[in-house]
Image (tube, rainbow, N blue to C red; front, side, top):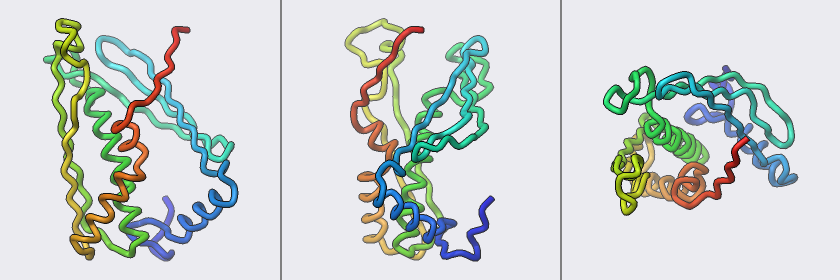
Length: 185
């Protein structure tokens, strides 16, 4: 783990490294292209395991080894051995926005003591089960509450909130339609 305690860091964010990365991207936009790829395998019943083995940044492949497990609760015919895909979706949105809140605070010199996001959404299973064509098979909306505490003012936290909504990749991905290009192998 990177020791940022002795560096120019706020909220654990190395501001010098952030500035260097932004400058490298500004000088060559190809440095800012990041490609993510995951592979998901069904492991029985409603359970699946997703493996992450690399990320490509600026054309360079960087090895990684992570596994994400998903399952459904008993009531949705699963074994309740892991979060379900909806919980993972919300977790991914929140995790992405958390990075944004922490980094946006850091570049403003604001030290956070709390950064918490609580998100909720409601699905109607009639859509998923194909029982009623008029019922969407996904969320109509996701509601969330962000709590920021630290040495910033309410106005600064509002500015940070607006900046995160303007720059967070997962906020963008969920708040707008994404073209999905699926094909059967």
